[in-house]
Image (cartoon, helix red, strand yellow):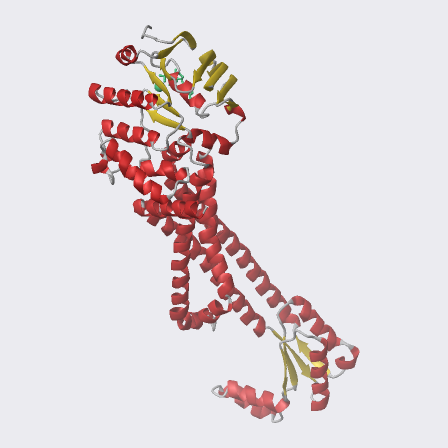
Length: 228
Length: 304
Ligand SMILES: Nc1ncnc2c1ncn2[C@@H]1O[C@H](COP(=O)(O)OP(=O)(O)O)[C@@H](O)[C@H]1O
Ligand SMILES: [Mg+2]
């Protein structure tokens, strides 16, 4: 069953700024797909379309075969909870502590307090942030912030992990740690969508690669390599 | 549901505490607004009281012919009281009483007492002193009764025609002051409300990024909005309590001083007499506005 499907999607920002043009593809449950393209190619736009943060100018996008464009606001929130997002700019809650950032995700799901108190420290332990539980995001290094973002994305056992250039601001060591983590998640059967313009990562992964250039998909290969 | 409510309440408390500066600033401007509105309510009360004082001093005096009997005059008094429900008082002053009053008033002035001695006889006329509620309508009514056929032959003269102009003038001045004051007050209150609105807007604008992140990770709009609205309610409640306590204390301690200045307006009695209304006004402007503003501002950033 496909979990995400783009059907002739075109996105034009004002001033005839065509970002994506007639994009169609399907992502099956359990796949690891990389979206590759130069900076400004439209990778972030594509991901924002999946999350329902932008509306396509034309065409349809489906999540679990339901048209995102026809979802009510509450349904959209539910869908977003099934997606764990990791972003280049982290998108952490700056006024909340490390602990609260992770707990928040469980709280919006309506998880019981006992479960939260039990799981959050475990997750923070796993990504090595146990010592920083009561710190605020701005008190963490870039790598630590990104690890927190990963913890947050995983804590609710989402169906899909979407990582938009998660390693863009990280050093090589942290980069491969994050990628290794994504591979591990994918092995547990979760769908992973990774956007990047890092050649080394793509060539090492050896998974499906969708390449975007000039707003169009120019390649979609099952065992792709980085060719632009 | 209860868990959810507890959660958003805790978020509100944490934000309130962590942004102490903004919280205090917001409470401060809310207090100013409530104080302004409360002050207006007191000015309104004091104004009404003073108008009433003036109105009570506006009276009509009907002088009867020297040979009118006391019984005849008292009949007129009964008639007046019967036909006019709102007449505050009708007082009978006999010839003798008028003389006593006059000598009392001018006992230090030898010219008057000499003049009186020369007249020899009591030159004063018996009279009825009618205190109206000050409205022109009642005024005309009193005049009509006094001028009616049954009474006009008993009456020497009615002392009101000159006073009518004064009365109308007093009223026009009063109503101008009221209109001007209300207009000014309205502008002040609007300005204060704008300041409150902008302070809360500023506080929430700081959280713009967070609101958008909360939506991206799948928080329902209710879950995002509730903490801000609870914070607004919290700001309002704290301001309300502070203002109410201040109002009670000031009314109590300033009561006697204020009564002297206004000729008897009692702050404490006014507070007790209007306690529920004052609570309603203060809570409405504090809590109500805190909530409404938060709601409107968050709405703007929730659109994803
Ligand atoms: N909200 C927006 N309004 C107008 N143009 C935008 C907006 N967001 C992105 N763009 C433009 O769309 C293009 C693609 O951006 P983006 O999707 O962020 O690319 P990538 O993530 O591949 O670097 C860029 O040229 C960018 O300037
Ligand atoms: Mg991008």
